[in-house]
Image (cartoon, rainbow, N blue to C red; front, side, top):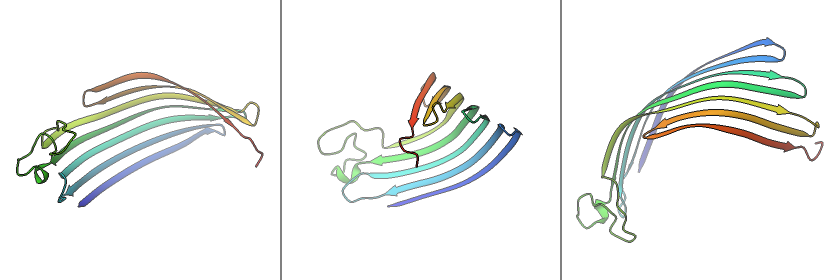
Length: 173
């Protein structure tokens, strides 16, 4: 068995304080990843996977801080271009049948083709607003809302997500 992953990542971050209570953050990330996994077991499937991906992430955020509350407003965009090749072959366990459609033992399941090569893009865009309120001082109430858009290999999601949370400080330590 052999697994190798190589990744190069570049990041640029900017922080600007408009005032003592107001901060702007910008983050830009670019990454390039290449990897492969090879297994050649005696009593199982051959697995061979090669992945080549380019990713980019951009995020802009404004944080406002007050002694009783704070707010975070932001937008982000994440995109990956992926090129992959996967081989999942049960031939070593199937008594000579080349690339069978299921393993030779129960339960019999239909498997995808022995080799799958595909190129696709994952897109994820988000806009969000969060607020944290400390009232009384031993309780932190979190309220928020995000809008998410995700596209990935036939999956297309566009939804609004409310956020609610409560953290209670039980002891003064």
